[in-house]
Image (cartoon, rainbow, N blue to C red):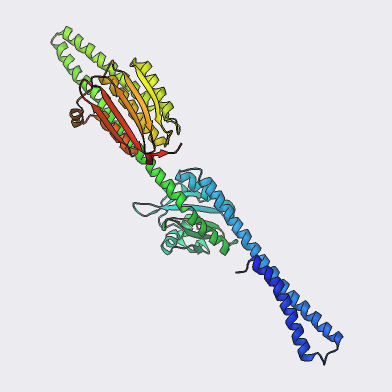
Length: 449
């Protein structure tokens, strides 16, 4: 393929070689037969004809190169626009909408759809669209047989062109049978696998050029990784929500549900006492129930406050923990001391900071419940390999092995939270010697500050 540099050398060498060869041939063949003025006319005519032919070739080549540059600039502009908008979000809906919107504007299309393959059933489901009929967008997104040749493009691994949508049920069903449209269907690839397809349709009066087909094909190869990352992010978020719901459910069962169960049993006891005329005992049971209810209310308010504690910003774990410890001390009257941050500075990912904050909240809640009157010390330690949060108290302590065998939910929750971010939880305690809790997060969960 010619480029500008090659064309420059051709424009110098070819005319020179042509004149030299022509002059040599004419002089050697009929120099004695043709007069000088006739020879001049022949040379001028031949050179003019050669110059015209050569200029036609040069300008045609320059026009083709200019067209290729325009096509490449158009392709780069579209890819940059899609990458810029799609990279601003990790939501599949927003990423897909950015892709279809930019493709529709760049190609002047009537409709653009983006379908992804389901992991469980392999069905194509519409993830985003622009300009499709209402009957398509109002459904559950499953394209079924009306996939506009997307499934065939996935099977073949390259783009397909439908000249007239009315001649193909798969396109007519999704684009509308009455309108005459032409459509490109191209696979979306990521890491060597087809994860979906993109289809672009416009009226048959404006057929797609080979350059536009190549552009849609290139786009399908470029956006695959972005879409797959968005899918993985959505799955990770769903898993995190599910795990958090499980923890909250177990907390409710371990706390409020057990309290309500206790109150229900006590109500039965009080009914029996009142039926037997034992008013004094019934009054004592009511006072006990009142105290339990107050404690349950305080615990519930504390849990709500903990869950509403804002997610710390990157690098803000120290500030978040210090503020929480100070507020906890003021609300409960328990002396709490924040010993600060020791070692090299480090910034954790937001999810890691959230889990560490929740572990500290659970640990302090346990101090309030099981070690009234104790003092608490909290510190954050970091080095090149790990970040650790240490909580100590001088309370009565407990038999760690015995409590662990009972499956106490609070300890299990803290362990699960630490393990969810690749960390570990260590608890040291024995009766009469206080408790030391350390949660450690390895370097993989840490980003350089």
